[in-house]
Length: 116
Length: 112
Image 1 (spheres, each protein chain N blue to C red):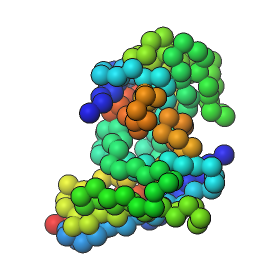
Image 2: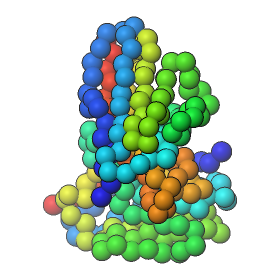
Image 3: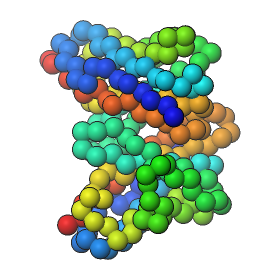
Image 4: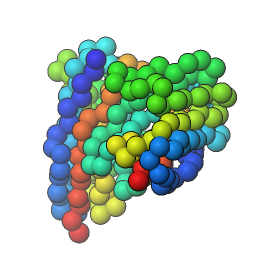
C-alpha cells in the first residue's frame, strides 16, 4: 500500500529555535498534502492544505507566518515551525492524497515536537 | 463548516464481543466518511471508508453503515480481539481529496 514517511519522528529543541518537519509520499505522487496537529488525548485538527507548486491554505486561527509550509514537489512537503515555544509542543501529522484513482488520504506516522 | 460528533469517548468490551461507535455530522454536502485506527505514538491508519452512494460496507470483521438522511454513520467491529484496542476516529469530508473533519475519538479497550 501507499506509504507516507515523516521525518524526524521525534524532536526536542530549545524555545526560540525553528524546526523543519518533512513529509514524503514514497510510492506515489501526491497532488495534495495536509498538515494536522494533535494534542495529547485529543483529536486531529487540520492546520493547512498544501497543493504542489502553490501557496498553502491555512485554517482559521493558524498563523501562516509561524507555520511555514512548502510543497515544492509532488512527493515532498515541509512544515517549519518558526521561533517555537513550549505551547507549540504537539504531535504533527501529515497526510498525502493522489487525485488519480480516487484513493483515500494516507497518513504519516507523525512527528512529536517538544519545545523546552 | 463541518462538525463531527463521536460517541462514546471510551468503550470497554470483552474479547469476542462486538463494538459499535457512532458519529454524526452537520454538513449535508459531505460525501466521504473514513474511519481510522490510531495506536499510541503513531499516525492514524485507515481501516474502512464509505461514500454517500452506499449505505453499508463490510470488510471481514469491520463494517460501516451510513444514514445520509439522518447524517450519521457507525462503525461495527465484530469478534473483537485484544489487538483491536486503540483509539478510533471517524471523519467526514466532501471528497476523499478534501480536508477531513475528525470526530473526537473513541478509546477502545478489548479485555481478554
